[in-house]
Structure formats: structure tokens, C-alpha cells
Image (cartoon, rainbow, N blue to C red):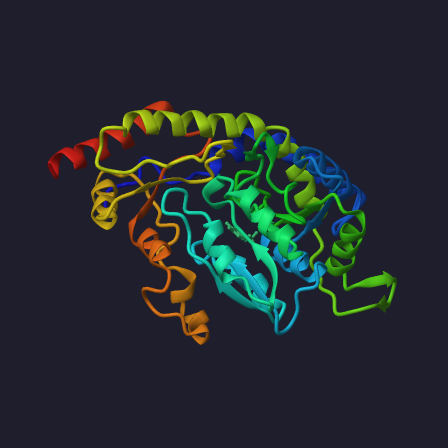
Length: 372
Ligand SMILES: *Cc1c(COP(=O)(O)O)cnc(C)c1O
């Protein structure tokens, strides 16, 4: 294996650049000892809600937890169905299972890899209690038709925005469109903590209160729980780091978009299909994903040149062993299955240089040419 010269992602440059500022913020938390929730979390919640254009944000300990409390808050429980995508990170479906509910999949659109609203409509039944789309790779899903469906059927729509901080649909940030928007601050996400973190955002104050209860044992007062709750509190140290990074997020997103445009331009004549972006949307490129029938071969070719790639995600959720009980065989969601076979993520993070991106694109063009 060649030495990796252009990694898929590298957290070190960003962390190094912010190290002094992070240490100062951590020191503040060490002094006030507000390790779980506390003033840093409250301040971050206010700042993140403003960023999303919602009135409330509730900080939790992961994106998975955000999805779980969001579904619980809108009343999803045992025996319910939640319509969602089979082509995403598995945590989207975990949250449904944690509620005792069942994921019901609808296939994706082959161009944007996000839920196909027509297939969602066909998947709704009287048991459906919520719709859970994902803004995959940083591109907003087709929100308007999905929200329209949700409204007509009286269903909450929960957005999995774990990969899409700051992405916009019709000029308005994702997370603010649905009943609740869920974000992850896992270190590799566009806004990443120095550890685990997540948030659920909403403009419904009663719902926000419910989310706050759920993240902390459902305690209405100390040692009085009104229902089964969780220990999903956000940590003060993570909030302190996130407040520093949130100030840079727009600048980092602009750089991601600049690099994506560069790839788009350089790969235009190559064998791979570059990302399609729907009208009225801005893509924040958590991942820059190309498509080719022989992506494994391309991945090996790039690895031999020291270029890292990723396959997000190589197995659709209905084909995971964990979901064998759903009885959904191969061929059930052909678009998701084809995407799982054909997608390849290229190196992209704000500190990637133009020269590195050029090197990746040149290697892909060389591979394309060598294959006729
Ligand atoms: C990362 C991610 C999650 C889970 O977030 P964690 O913070 O890792 O729990 C959920 N959904 C999607 C689409 C993700 O990318």
C-alpha cells in the first residue's frame, strides 16, 4: 500500500489551528466545573439555534441521541412505523428501533441519493407515525413535497441533518423545516466537537421542553421522573469547543464548496459521475461523492497513488444483518443497492489544498483514460 499523501479527511490541521483557543475555553470549564450541561451548553444552544433559524436548540451527547429524543418527543413508540431511507448511516434507523418502532424504507432518487417523495407517499400506512428523511452528504433532501405529504397526513417530519450543518433549501437552513432537526457533532462532521455531541433544533417551545426532559431522565424536578428518560446530556467541554468552531463554520463551508466546484470542473470529462445538486438547494459537501460501476477498482487505483477514498455506504440498511428481521431481500430497493455498489467519496475537508484536489482529479482522469 502506498503512503497516504492525500487523506480522505484530516482533523489535525483544524485542531492545530484552534488549539490555543480551545485550551483557553477548556480551562474556563475546568474552573467553573460545569461538566454536564451548564452555561457553555446554554450559550451554545442559543448560538446554534440562531444559526439554524429556530427558536430552540437542545444539546445532547450525539446525533443518534438527538434523533432518538426527537422521535420520542413526537410520540413514536412500540408498534409504530417510521418511513425513512435505506441509504444512510445506520444510526438513522437505530433511533427508530430504540423507540420500539419499525423502520419502513422507501427508495432514494438515483441523482441526489436522497428519499424519493413519490416512494415515501406509497410507503405510508395507518401505522406510520413519522417521516425521517436524511440530508445525505450535506445536500438537503426534497423537503417541500415531503413536508406536503407530512402535512396532509398529519405526520411529524424529523430531519436527519447530521451531515448538513448550514445547508439551505430555498434559502433557509435545514433543521428549521421539519418538526425537529437533528444534528451530529461527531469530530468528522462539518461542525465537530472534540468528542461526541449532537443537538435537536425546533421552533416549537413545548416540544423543546419535552426534548430537554428526555435528555435528562425525564426529570420534571430533581428525583421526579414523569416517564422513561435518558442520560443524553451535552458536556460543557464539548459545548465550549463547538462555540469556537461554530464561528468558523461558514468560512469552512465556503471552502468545502470551492473545492467541490473545483472537482466538478476537473472531473467533467472523466468516467465518473459528479454530484448532482437539486435546484433551490445549497450543498455543504460533508462528503464529495462520485459514482462509477467499477468504483472498487477506482478506489484501489487511487490508493496505489496515496489517495484516500471512502465508501459511504457500502451496504444498504435493509441488507444489514441487524435488519434481517424486516425480511427485505436483495432487489427490494434497487436504487439504494446500486448506490451502495457505486459511490466513492473523494478527499474533501476545508484544509485540503487546491494542489491536493488537482492531484486527485488528475489521477481519476488518468484512470478514466486508461479504461478507454
Ligand atoms: C453521523 C450520523 C448520525 C449519527 O450521529 P452520531 O453523532 O455519530 O451519533 C446519524 N445520521 C447520519 C446521517 C450521520 O451521518
